[in-house]
Image (cartoon, rainbow over the protein chains, first blue to last red):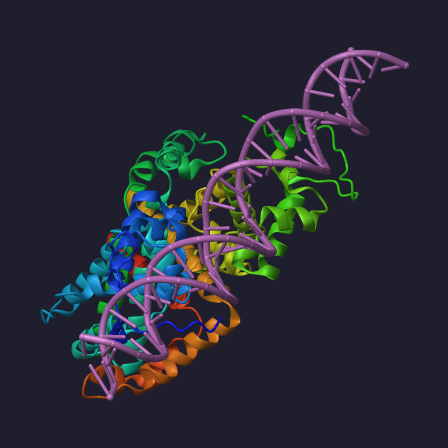
Length: 234
Length: 234
DNA sequence: GGCTTATGCCAACACCGTTGCCGGTGGATG
DNA sequence: CATCCACCGGCAACGGTGTTGGCATAAGCC
């Protein structure tokens, strides 16, 4: 109750765990990401996290108010990894495409984490940096403020939404994922032209197209639209 | 073990619950949707669901192999509600827009369910019907098979991904959601031009644009791109 | 009307997030 | 170098979760 969580920057006393680990926000987040990758989406557990760190589960509540705050810290870490080292090239379309792909793949590097984190607003440093970068590209390219904001929102939401969707697919247990892919081949690849003529006519490309993510193609369509909005504006 | 789940179509003996309820797949799914809406995303529980139905929790395992299969049934129900009663008008752009908006809003009518269900492939009837409808619109409009399939995939993934994203935002506890909106106003609405000039310059439109969903605007951009692909094809 | 077996119920298991309390220890203070 | 105290790790507990094996019963077929 009202248990105070000391901000990482004000931590003075670092007492090692009985098993010798010295905890920190950073260490906890990294361990959580490892747990997620290794044990699957439902495998991130306060108890397991404690065990992996060599600490009592309840100790973690000295660092995060609860599971939800840990999730936000994970989201922040992912955004940070996405924009780390990014530089504007001056070519707006390549820049936007680069940022989008970076976001998407930083999240997808940890699919289970992506599912948890993609829909959260962190309000922390990395988030502001990313927003500033994207808006900068759009306004420098010549978009009106209102248009820039609209495109910004579409771009970010698109990237995060696809990160969550693709992450969920990747995070499924191996057996389920294989069963899903098989479903496309057996069920939709062999529907009779009588009842489903269009599916039957496109069966080949349809099955082939279901591999991988639709994100890059969709991102390109969004950039197409932005490009024509730009030329029309001039 | 290997407890057999009798398919709904082969059910003969309908024995009423001690409290008088007569169970069925349909009834369980509907009750689950009601529970989700009423108790929030984490409120769908086998035990609560049992209680709401007037049945022992373990009884539900005679209808679904587990929580996951129940999720798929929910997803199927949502797709069904989305395409129920849809008819092609012949104008491809309006038709695609209509299907997309229907999908999105059918899912968002149950935000918590959308989060669970949007990323799943059901492989059931409604899904095939939806695919057939969309492919039909695209091919009738004049797209090559390969292009039609690509646009199909982008459209569906976009709609479901945004359903999950927007659903997650809507499903947050009231207090958290209000805090998030406030964050835009206070944090991003007041960043200094020194460190974040672009955010500062667009603060007004930025805050305003964060209300509501970016889905309709993004969908329109996707349709823009499809339109120019069509005219270029001719 | 009898038989089979589908189906509802009970009890139990292992696990979950979270909290109140205690005790030891780090670091500041003198 | 001694003192003190608040920070922080550990313990035990609470009420909840999904899931399963076994049992009794009643529904529907012959």
